[in-house]
Length: 99
Image (cartoon, rainbow, N blue to C red):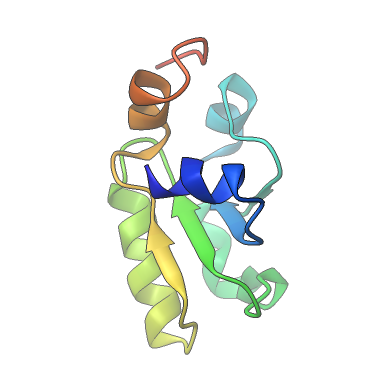
């Protein structure tokens, strides 16, 4: 996964978790910025736009919707974590709890 490669290369990026609070408490990726999907419109000013933004949710559907919203709002360097945190747990970190 490209996200794993970026981490290994120490590339700077924003990791935006758009899941609900209880999902984040269950499992999450380190160093994420957590803004639930429904709060993105009123909190988008908290998202830095000077680095690539990797958006993730459980399976990638909500994060794709947020990416489209942010793109329409003028954000540019956006990426959706394909398969979400569930794919990350399956393919990259099997020790991560899945739900």
